[in-house]
Figure 1 (cartoon, rainbow, N blue to C red):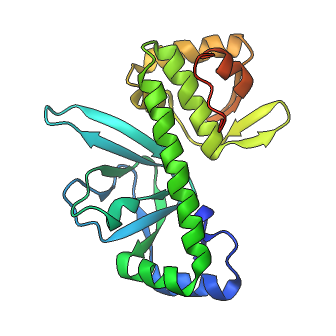
Figure 2 (cartoon, rainbow, N blue to C red):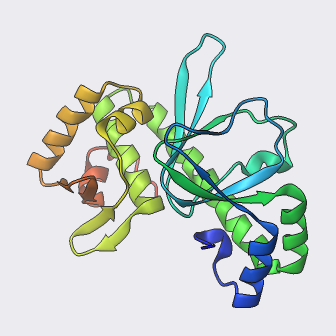
Length: 226
């Protein structure tokens, strides 16, 4: 069993062994439901491989994409504060997750204090993501929403390299369209324009982005964290 992500950073081998004894690993097929609205919040999850999408369904049946998660991301963390799951978590690709049962997590917090510190960092980053999402919702132009989404993805999943950030996630144009509330064709058009401007390059599903160029498209909204 492989432990991936910020929640497990800094753990020594003996501590990792404790985690693996308490936390089972589960596999989900593409489009598999990890949890659904109304499910009991009995665990949090750490994504080991694949992509997971968090979404919310309104009363009138409109689905809103909240986040697309990649390896190492923690989700379902509201299990400590709610009585039922408010969101839907779906496997975008076949994925593997580490399941951290609620009781097991409380035991780990007392036995391995470093996990508690890591968890605080995770929650802080999620709050920063919410600020980015609020900024995104204030932009009516889909091109600006796409720029903000690429900035957020680069901040969370990007790897710094020569000339920019590499986002090595299997993101389709449709997934990006769902994230910003527009059509796949619109995202394809915007990405083509960004490529012409030299702000984005693409090799297969991997994106290479110039964050300074993306910020220049939304100069009135340039948070320091990205």
